[in-house]
Image 1: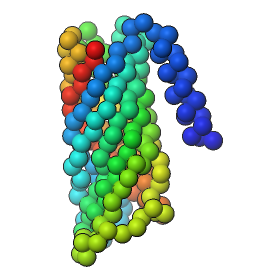
Image 2: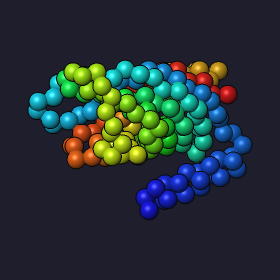
Image 3: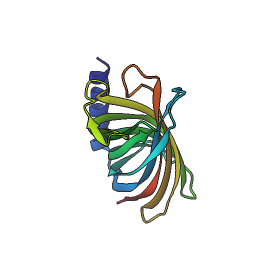
Length: 186
């Protein structure tokens, strides 16, 4: 039911956007560092470095406020002393954005994620293991970020996202992602 409500919300947002004359579309890409924030005492957890890339749409609400929607491919995951997890998501952030006349902006909002593929490897044995039943197909994070956009559309963005749900069944582990990159709106 939650998924249907979110899809309807996105559909309504896209219909509203088509009615806007000054909607800006663009592209963005950058690097990310992610890990699982877990309370597992015996695990030594380190980050996974990867990338993200996709498209953006800016829907102006007023002179200073916009809704920024994105559709991103995002490499995420973690590495411990026992296992390495590569989780690749399609992320759909819906962010409320306040922009200053100088070009600086701050943003916050939810990010829905749909697991596209994954690879889980036992480090000692260098063997890939099956983890379909342990990994959730969807992930939700809350993101906050800031950035700077020039008048020509070129921008620099930094974002911190923390998971709301647990991507691994039966584990109290939240996904944490820090990302930064370039965007261009036209």
